[in-house]
Amino acid sequence: MKRSLGLFTLLTSFLVLPACAFGNRNLVLTYPPKADGVAQPVLSSPVEPLVAVVLVDFLDQRVEKTAVGAIHNGFGSHTADAITNTNVADWVMSAIALELQKARFRVIRAHSVPLDLENSVVTGEVLTAYCNMYRKYEGDVSFSVSVKYRGKEIFHKTYDGKVTYKGHGTDFGSQFAEGLSQSLGVAAKEFTAELSRDLPAAISEGKLISERTSSIGGPEFYKGVKVYTKTGLLGEVIDTAVDAVYVGLTNGTTLWVKKEQVSTTPPAPAVAPAPVTAPAPAPAAAPAPAAVPAPAVAPAPARRTATAKPKLPALAVGTKLFNPDGSFFGTVTILDKSAVAVLLANGYSSITVPREQAVGMQR
Image 1 (cartoon, rainbow, N blue to C red):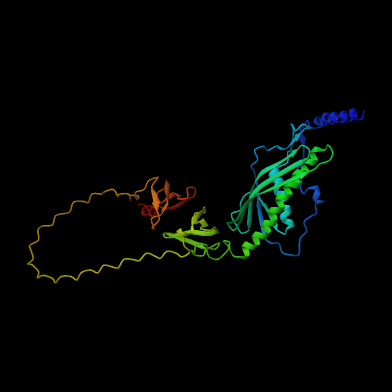
Image 2: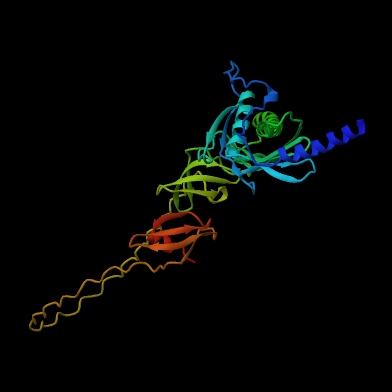
């Protein structure tokens, strides 16, 4: 009798478990996980925040954007999915922002990388957000981040949070969400701990581009300083990187140029050629006897000729221009009477230069 009852119970469990495992589960992704307790508001601290961090919108690089989990029946077969309408990239960023605020960072959310790189900038990609359920919930959330300070990368790393969560009951949706939230917490907290350690250390050790001299021993390029090429003023510095400067050009556009191609010192003015000394006049010869003048003939009226139009210096679209040191400057794309548009050597920026100057830059 007991043997028959045990067999009946076993068969019943295998029949019930598969029945519960059919049908997709909809879930809402939240953070922090319930295991962390009730989320507490981030209070302002009397201690000055470490540094402001610009958190730029992450890219969602997952192949499957809707399904965030798989449900398996008692036989281990994949019978249904856990799906969500939550913006996963925003969910990951919100968790990172919360952990950074707990660590006393001032977080600024942004849709794109700011041009004025005064603060540290965090960009990233969501790689994984998935949870498998068979006998337990196995969550996996991973993302890669790049951290830069004033244009210089401090580190680039992938963080992968994995958690095995033992759920209870048949409320699969909330338990999937909890397993994913705990996995995200592992990755977000690891990233925050490393940023709290590496960013202040890099700043205090003076290893960043915020130093007053460039790392390649070039001139000092500060924000707002005028920079020059060998032909004249190029513009003002907006930002700097290791071996380049971001310049606001005089025509209103912007351009990254290598530091070795510009200088903070204006070019020396061209030296005027020395005046040619006229030779001394030869001694006057004795005057010849005066000749009898012939009768004057009235000159023929002068014939009016058309004034020739000034000829524009030779130049054509596609002409390659070069700097005085021989390095490639750019290619002419548009011609005008007094100026030309030039596509610069970097392949994506254009500037306007006087036509006469462009003619002199041919080789």
